Image 1: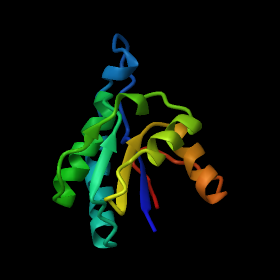
Image 2: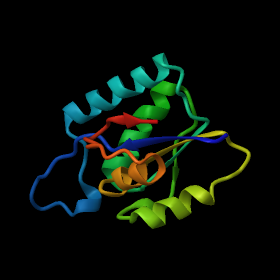
Image 3: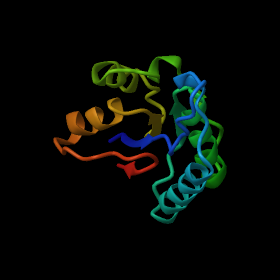
Image 4: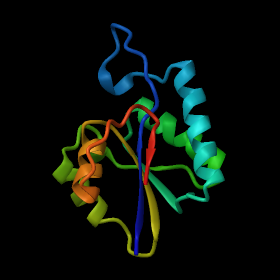
Length: 132
């Protein structure tokens, strides 16, 4: 059975003058991502690969995770950015069958909606909070 780790990007800045796609992580967001990656590693929940939105805050979160988990850098998939629940489920269904455990690094509301769709659980998914 395949496993999926849903990861919302860590806390990003809301500075004026930046387009949404180019918002960087806050220093605290970088720290939070490292802490969450450490928790994942401690629990033995290390995915074989990460797939990420190419937005700066999301790929930065994925980079922190890949470094801490000692896995390859995330594959960027443009269609994850601003994807709806159905679009994310389509992306998930098209992932390679040769990998049993994939981490998807994305954005809300899509990540929370996919969590609900797959588990029936309604949960708040704050930045860099893991759900598996």
